Amino acid sequence: MKYVLLIVSFFWASNSFAHKDKVISKSYGNVEVVFSTGFYYEEINKGLIIGEYAEMLSKKLNYSEPIVLFFKHNYTSYEERYYKINPIREGPDSNLKNQIFIKMKDSEYDICEVLKLIEYSISNSNKDIDGLSILKKLKDSTSTAIVSVLNNKVYRPNVVNELMISKRDGVSYYYKNEECFMFVKRDNKENVLFSSKNIYQFSKRGDFSFLVFDTKESFYFISSIKLDEKPKKVIVRNVDNQFLPYLIKGISYSMTSITFQKYRNRKNERVMIYSHHDEKLIQNIGNFID
Image (cartoon, rainbow, N blue to C red; front, side):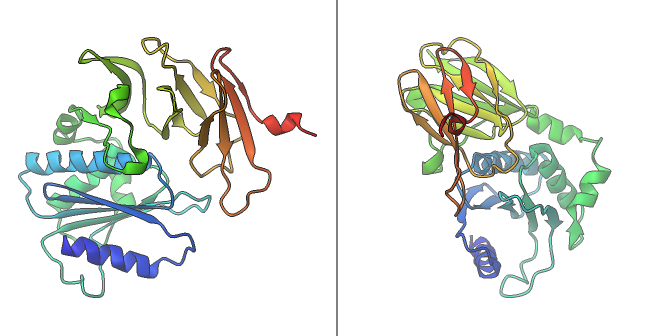
């Protein structure tokens, strides 16, 4: 859409951060999702899931005008958070009327919260509204329309090349009722392995096994030879300064390395080793090196 390109161009022009962000956009009916982030995080897929739910919600509320959801991912340690509804803009896109434009910046997005802002925006045509204040008012209130929409399953998108997982592996997740359900599919049946409020990172190890981080402080190892068993939750300690995706590598049949990547500064990288056979995690292999 023309207005989306203008919005993206404006953002690039005003972005002073040296690292060039990735921008992913996808349409769901009258809803356009634009997600800007520095690296390929699973949070991108959450933005696309929100887009699918937003289309369902707009249909339920009989709203057909354009809705633009602009997600700016705050992936660094710098704390900044905002949700702006129909912010007043200058430039060639300033006369775009009859549309809802929600510009957001956060480290992790809550699907229900964004849907509340969309519903509020459909009912209110005011300009330049602070979405955080709206969310505070609506904290303990969820409409029947949103509850109904969230009762639908929305499966993990498989549209961003860098985040794709082959359908042949049979492992994925869907979102429903404010929860993620990780499953393995065999013979057209879905066996749920575990559920979580969030999926932080979903990485294939390389041999039909997966590491799934529900947060950056914990993960599950889904083994190719134990696909029907509920995996154990493994705790990662001291992750305060970790903000890039973990680098996952299979280093032997039974061991996987998990590297804390550093942006710009490659010194003192932390590497963990997880033994699948023993279900044990060495928190920092560097502690054993003189």
